[in-house]
Each structure stands twice: as C-alpha cells, then as structure tokens.
Image (tube, rainbow, N blue to C red; front, top):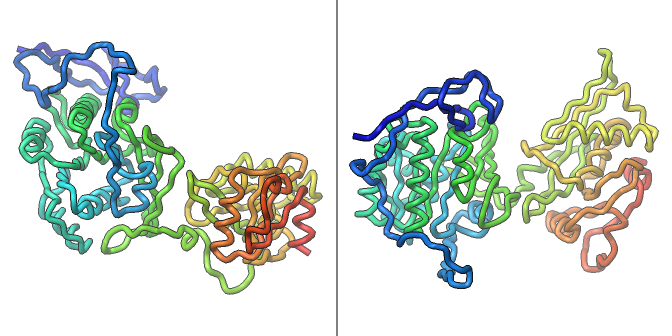
Length: 455
C-alpha cells in the first residue's frame, strides 16, 4: 500500500511546508496554507501516461536532431499573432481570465474552425448539451471536433490513446483530478500533477494542448506559481464585462514575442476578430473637443493609434487631484512637472484627469508628446485638429526625444488617413520624408509644437 503523508500548501503560490504557517515565506500572504494529503507513487499505482521514450542520457548538442515541423495556422489571425505565428507542435498553452470573459467561447471557436485537425475538447465544467448549445450560437459546424466530458485523467488519457487527436483542449485544468493524488480537484497538488501529465503527453507525442485556467481575486492564475513555469505559453484574456471588447495578451511565450496583443469583439455569435484596432481605440466625434489627441504606440509588432483624453479644471477642494486610467501615474506626475517648469503652465492648482480610450494599459514612451499636448489643450481649452497625431518621448528638459520604429508609426498614421504627424527631429536621421504622403513635422522642443497647434 502506498505511503501517505500530510503537507501544507500555500493556495496563492504553491509553497509547501511540513507544518502550518500563518504567513507564507515565499509570497508573503497570510492564512493561505491548507492541509492536503500527498500520496507517494509506488509500483502498484496506476500509470496515467506511460512514457515510450528511452532512458535519458547525456548527449552532445551536435548529436541531437529534430524535425522542423511547421506551425499550424488557424483562421484566427489574432490568435496566430499572440502565439508567435501559429500553433507549435507539442506546445502547452495556458489561457487565463476572469469568469465569463469568454475563455471557453474562444477555445470552442478555435476547435470548430480547425477543420483539417481532429480536435478533442475535454470539459470538466459543462455538459455535452451546454457545449452543443454554444456551438449552435456560433453558427460553425465541424465534423472533426469531438467533446469529452470527464475530469479523471485516467479515463481521459485512455480515451486520448484510442482517439489519437491532433489538438487537445482542456476546460479547465482546475477541474481535472489525477488518481495519483488523494486531494480534491482544484488543489495545489492536483493542479500541478494534472498539468505535469498533460505536459508529458504533449511533449512525447507532439500534440498541441490548450488548457484553460481560473484566476484568483487579484487577477493572477490560480494554482501554484510553478504552473506558469511548466507551460510553454501563457495567454491572458481580459476586458471589461460591461463592454463587448476583449484583449488577448501574451505574458510568456517560448516560441515568440511576449508583447503581442489580440483584440476581439464579443457578439451573440461568438468572438469577432478586430483586425483594425483603431475602430475601437479612436472615437468618432462630430465636433472638436479640447483635451483629445491621437498618439502612435507599438504593441509587440503592431502599431496602434490610440486616443488620449484629458480634463484639466481648477481644484476647488484643497489638494489637486491627479488621476490616470491606463497610463502610469508616476510618469503623469513627471510630465506635469515638466509642463510647469519648462512650459510655464500653472498646473499645480489644477485637477488633472487622464484616460486612455479603449481600456488599454500603455507604457510606450512615444505617448509622452500626445499626453502633454492633450493636457495643454484642455488647460487652454483649444481643440487639437483630429487630422494630427503624435509619436515622441518628452525629456525632463522639455526636449522631444526620438522613439523606436518610427517608420511603422508613420506608415500606420498614413494608412488611417491622418494628415500630419509630429515626431522628434532626432528621428529624421536616415528617414526619407518624401516616401510618405503624410506631412511629417520634426520638432526639438515642446514650445515648438504648442506654437504650431495651440495658437
């Protein structure tokens, strides 16, 4: 009979301890340790997935050979982008997000659109009828999408060996339960063990596997922190449930960039890909309003034009307020200090509110110039023409500094119909302005921009 022992696991980070602790020494959280029974594997225990590979031995890197298997491109361009160019054979992808944000809808939509692949959709949360109802709402049909409603890994891998799928989707990893652990589903030990079994199968058979994961109240993925280290790619599906737009971000990717962003719109028929993000990041307005500017940012490999909104008003209640949504509050304080010291604007007695339209959180320094222009526009109550956009960093001396990939920013602004773009004069080195139909205005200091726009 297998030996059993009791251990205490932190529900926040997965740190284990032989005794209960009030404060976790790993993550610093209080009252997160839970007692769990841990069973050691012995010869009588069932083997969930038996490895067919030979015993490991040290090999020279020159001896190692591999087949350059091509990536699988889906019909979802946004997913292909965040994965780094398609689905990699044998990869293990973890998708996290808030309840009801659309994780299951996204994965079922992918399963139904992979027409030339045998997809096994494993659900431990919903019944076959519920999944069928969602599939009918999507108006997508596929004869290669198969549903398995089970949560025991022993039976799941038995069905996988018989079915031999090309792609596996697990919804969700917190509902899976391995017989090698006596704890309940969703515990730290179960999540780690089940992930390890799916990872072992994916690597040894070359089958791409997607796992849906729950998140905690602070927005991090539930389960041990080692879960994110085990998988190849971590995707975060986020968005405001009061709006229809969703963002798919890459926080870890062994096969591509970690700065990519996919944008979707949630409809009654499923998720629609937003190939032109400017349709949601730039609002349509009939009249000119002060405090609104358009900036050019780079998210991964994609240039985006986003709208920046500012409101400056007299502080009638003592200490002036400094509020920003989607923009770093400390950087906003720095830019306000630059405007007051170098520009002569008396913002110390003003309330300043800043908002990045579309719900994005941005950190591109190229948005400094549109932010300060937006603030001054609201302060002076002078609208900025909607045919003008900006892409430059602002230094502490009030100088306008160069930013990276200026050619992509100018080309995107030209494609979207802007007439003028303001950049740093230090970005013009090696840049042929005659190649663009848009008017490119180089500037060296903030007062040069303000004199031309806010006069």
